Every structure is written in C-alpha cells, then in structure tokens.
Image (tube, rainbow, N blue to C red; front, side, top):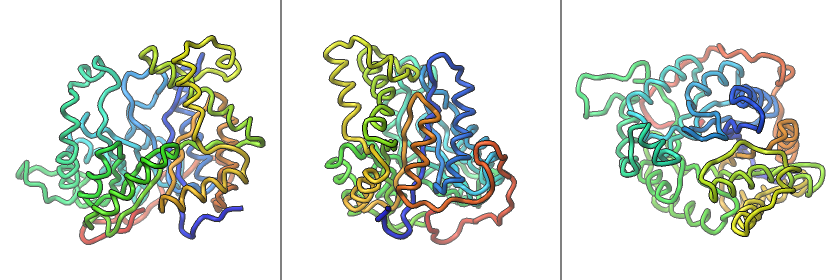
Length: 365
C-alpha cells in the first residue's frame, strides 16, 4: 500500500487533550497508553507538548511527562514538541534533558519552541512577556553550550548531568523559526500539511539557508500535521470535529475547551463566525481510508521532501483515535515492534545503552 521512500520516519505528537467530564489525570494516563501503542506499531518518536493554563490541555510539564513515557516504553524515541524555551532558563532545560538522557540513553529528543503563554494573564504568571520570544536564537545557543561545555556566559558553572551528553535538538517553526533552525544548523519541525504553499516556502527557505553544525551535517525536515484514518471518509472526517470546534470556540470566546463528542457539536447553534472557523478547521487535513491516506501521505512527502512526518491528531473518542493510528501505521507500511500487548504490557524503561557523548558530528536519531 505504501509508496513512501526508504528510510522514511513516521512519529506522533500528543498534547494530552482533555475530554468533557473527565479529569486531566485521565488525559495524561492516556498519553502514556498511546505512547506504548505507538511503540508497538513501529512509530519512530513520541513527543509531548507544553501548554500552561489551558482548560483543554493537561500537558503543562513536558519533561516530566516524557520521563513517564520513557519509563513505560523501551524502544521508541521520546521527546518534546516542544519545550517553550522563552519560558525557562536554558541551564534548567539542559539539566532536565540531561537527567532524561542519563536515565534513558539514546532515546531522548529535545524539541524547542519560541511560543509564550496562551493569554496575558498566563504570561504574567510565568513571569515573562512577549518580547522574550525574540531571544529564542540566543537561548538556543546558550542551551546547546551547556551540553558541549563551550558556553562563555557563566564561567565555572556546569549543567550536570547534561554536559558531555548528546540530546538531538529540533526547532519548532512558526514563521521565523525556519530561519533560526537553518542558521543554527538544527533539524526543523514545521507545519502544517493544510497550508501547503506556506509549508513549502518555509522548507525551501530552511534548506537554502542551512549551515552544517556539530548537531546536524545536513538539513533534516519534519513536517507536522493532522492525519485521521477510518473505514470510510465520513468516519475519518468526524474524528476531526471535536478539535475543529475547540479551535473555533477558542478563537471566538477566548478559551480552549476540553474536547466534546461530535454528535453534540453537530447539533450546536453557531454564529456565522464560529461556523466559518469550524468549517475551516475541518478542511485541508489528511483524512480518509487507509488507501486514501497512503496516497496523500506519499504526495505530501514527495512535495516537501520531508524526512519525517509528525502526526498531531486528537479526537474525543480515544478508541477511535487508537484505531486511526493503527490504520495509519498499516497505510505507511510501518514494521511493528515485537513484545506483547502495548496497551497492557509494561515496557522496560531501564534498558541500558552506552551514552552518546559530545564531540564531532552526529546523525539525527
């Protein structure tokens, strides 16, 4: 079924979306459950995100959640998509990833973003303002310097246990991010599949401006997007309904709600603006049967030249979401990993591997 190029990678980003009537703890536990399923299905990475003060998202501490996921799995790479670097001191971020890499050597990724809080109130609570997003390039360089031990800003200070370890860094791009990633010589994560013209422009700009670094010899592009698979196209489209409504609600009422069941959403009376945003949220995504999605995925990879696709789907029905990821794995021709039932069998988070140390160029994990 799959016509994807050899060596192509398919990965998952989960935002720990909450559902109506459920506690946030359920969303976090289901993120871990999904990671174990993704590992068994053959997905390459499993990443989690950082959101603060958002009613519909439980994932506020990505490195903590990444530790739980890495401990519940044994082979899939685990990381962040991403840690919002302007919210944190680079030394603390280095220490956190140094601990993760020390516990789970060779499996940790460090995705980095430049976004700040969801609202002015959240930003004030975090102790930051919008201007700090402009310091993102400098913060990246300081962060990487804590790993290499080459930073000059704080003589005699060392980030332990990070110094000397290799944790692959990725830059999450929103506009300016593509240039920042290229100039720093780092892998790029860019979305989304719906805005194909803008996506292609960002990828082209990144590749043309890329400067090889000790972290990446050549450009590496991860394209992010929503993908939904179901037995019929209509069923796949209905998987998109809860997130489309949550986005429309957020943009018209100012808060991002937990996911609601599609049958309730389809009966809502919406304003004209809400209806327009809702319908827009349902268009342009890659969804349908396994065959249809296989064709669309192959075309997206061909057009973008992406090395990897990071899937960010969420919906109200968790079992339908799991079924979608299973169908996508079949559509993409992923090779399942052995080792029992991913939903109920514990992973060995203490697999021992030699630490990758700094010094010289490295391939992307």
